[in-house]
Length: 344
Length: 296
Image 1 (cartoon, rainbow over the protein chains, first blue to last red):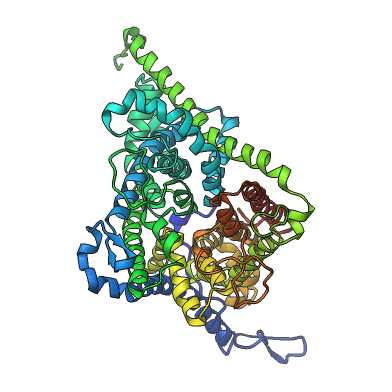
Image 2: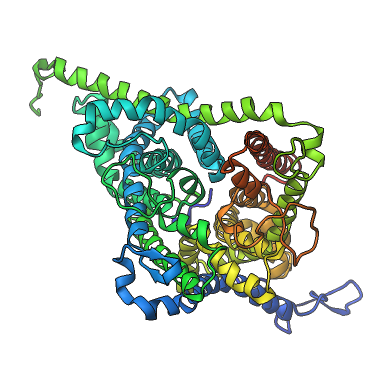
């Protein structure tokens, strides 16, 4: 691995030799060393092509923003900020308000984080600090495999396995013992906010745990040894020596997971029930910003209807960008000393 | 003579209290439980895929187009082909663009402000929800063409491939030692030739891994295809026409009320997973065996 701290010398390819740089052969005739000629033209063309590719990344984000803003202006002019606080979603009368979707997105994502974060941190702690060395790679690989399963397959599994399970066993149990909190009330459909939260949690765990592992690995080994030398138990060492030093990065991982949960579409659409309602109970069906776009975009007949859906998309885009930027910065504060790794 | 200092050994063994030991064991137990709780759904998903899917995969499923509601039989051949088709279109756009941007970042933009901006934007693009990308591809291609099309689906997936490929390509190229580049320059090789035939070549297996990561990520994507490729009950090879895709078909069948379609959804999901795992595995194997492993 290159030690980047040393800094590589900047070279710009072979330079043209000055006039006097010539060699003579045995007969005393002067021969130029380089016959291939000038590569400056090709070099510049290549540089330009790569620059265009690099620039295209910027252009893509700009394009996304432009498309969303341009195509949602109709709805923006019609409703303004109120769009996000109105609960009415009535395509027949051209009345649109996104509040139920915003609510559903926030509740399902937070529910997912509540379930996923302790699990993900537990997994990361186990893999980096507790597991036998031989198991480590295998466990890391398997948890990351969770991220490779397509969203639609999670949705399929949730419809036919998770939802019946919730309906028959989990929800009646929750209602009996925790019904008094009013979070677990009403008929156990299976489908609803709770199912969405659980399936999102499963999808978020690999992200949070892989970032947590990354930032925990970035904590210097001496830190652990020092705390252990003071007589700490393993857990005390992890708590004071590792987790405390990595907390900014772990928070970054959690926020990155939040970003994923906010924008997740298919699995949620398949189990959340798709009803623009605001209910206190987690058993009730809901709707999210991403799933309303997925469900209604192709059926949106009026211009205002389509524009409103795109405005929902614009809001989702802006929120996820902010969340991701924040997460990147937090992770970066912990890992900047160590070489970057891909966590795609 | 200096005085010899001795320390008494009293400080050595303050025993760890029962409370601290118990907490330690409990936390270890909790962490192990978390691992099990996380692996459980993974096993359940794969288990159900195989259990439900394998019985429904037969020759008809792999060679026929869907039958109308109520008739049993039929298959997803057009959807499988459609997925491959859309992915090929996406790779045609996405792979060169992503690799080019990666080359720019590692070979030209290292440390420069513009390079950092691009790197940061790529990370942002990576976090954009896929459904948003679908809206954009709809606006760009579908509205221009006037109808849903395979091209629109390909463009949507290409946009999603670019950031992953860019970042992994950059990281892999950065692993190639500077000395390798200098050696090429020393032989009089021009800079563009060095980048393509020496640097990129050395990092080939890593770059391919990145491309496959991106490929696997978009292969199962459904949301951006909903209003771009749209889906189709019949065969289609035209760029400008709506095309079936495996993920779309799984979605449609899963939320339908018909048992026969549910069965096919499971089979389709199994095929999709196998497709992803096999293509990624095969390319990685080839890259590890055949290519120069480079200096890392």
